[in-house]
Image 1 (cartoon, one colour):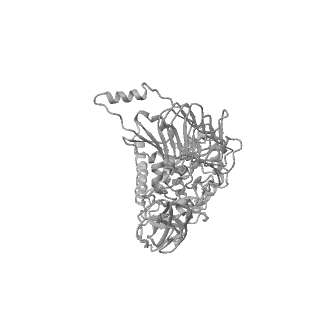
Image 2 (tube, rainbow, N blue to C red):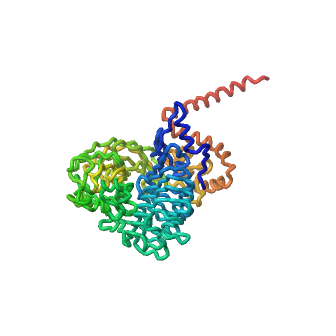
Image 3 (cartoon, one colour):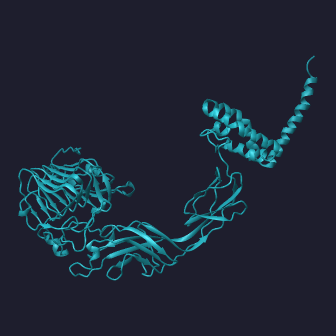
Length: 621
């Protein structure tokens, strides 16, 4: 679906008006940034945030020279049409993924000039980019992996495009073109058709140069006339679906094999021109994110780590052209997580810990010289205990500084059997005996927790910054608890006994007490008041127990009848009011209150006996 726009005046006219009008100036360009989560999005006058690629494109204004930056994430989008001149750039090629959701064309460039699309990975679509009636279209440093029925890029007649430093992997057709266009410094790997041309077109060697193929393309254009053609295995790091890491391994024939003539200024600085999505002056400089970080062991002062090595030659090679620059990994750690690592107590002295592979073998790696220190937390406060069949349900509010909790239980007070339950604020004790009173309490404990992440950095000897420049984003974070464990005292001690909430005999899905059926749920305060009255005043004597036995025998049938006739529930609730009120009075009031109430009732009874005869004596004769 094309993104419709209303252009009242051509762009040139608008510019002329803006320059010519007194007291006016051109509006500043706006960077429009796309995030996966709105929580990461902070807009300003010059930066606007969006959560879909489509919304950013719709808001872009070509007269201001707007640009669109897409942050790492997977974006499944409906077909998009670009008819204005903007640049769309991913922050990190491998992790900025644009999906077509399995069909359709992801981006159609129609009637535009001066568009650039860079550092994105296109997946799962019938077509990645379609160029029609457009010119000066720059498609560079992208990865295309649409599937064996997809066409990565199609260029129609009357269009011009530069397709430079891209990687095409497992597409039905990598490039389909009707005109001679610049196709240079690209890697074509495992496509059904690498390049196809319509109308008998033979690609000119002046346009089609310095490309690498890892297999032949018998039904494509005549490639024998092209120059600097490589038929090689590019040695990708890991092109598997889960990673899509198309960086080049050490020894790849695509390293420094590209055309440098189009990058004169850049080449004089870096002195290298790689083929593929990670070559050229606009290539992504962020190494692939470290994966599978795990803790393999701990002591009271050390944490052993392991992770999957990054096999990009920029990480595994000691230098670039004998520059001798270090490369390797950084270990970030501290007592806080996610980007605020503040560790300073390991043997290296500061965080992050920089591991240069030419001096230290990593991974694996062990953080040593740690000095964990912790303060005992306060005791929790145990909430009222809930019960079920052979079960007690405990909960408590979290305690500041606690890294875990222990539940204590037993049939005497204080309870002495501990259970470590981890860093949670609720726990269910099961396997208990119905009718047996259990005493329960909770304690909190604290142990020093280290939060750890790892990054990889390259050998270009440039300024490092996680996920920004020449250093990967943080790996998935791991945690380790080491050192002494300090435990609080016990919480308040509560007692309760488990009990089946279904009356006997069990009526499947319907068995319950009459009050439960009337009020709709077992934890209703009216039901609980009747239960407490039963426990305190009926189960403690023979007549009371006999009544409870009779009720357990016949009550479920009445409860089932009520459930089958919900219109009776309000009537039953009214009928139960005296019983519920009496139960609440007997179980929820103090002994002194009960004494005064009974005394008052007694006085009222005596008074009624005294008044009644006097009234009889004064009846009219």
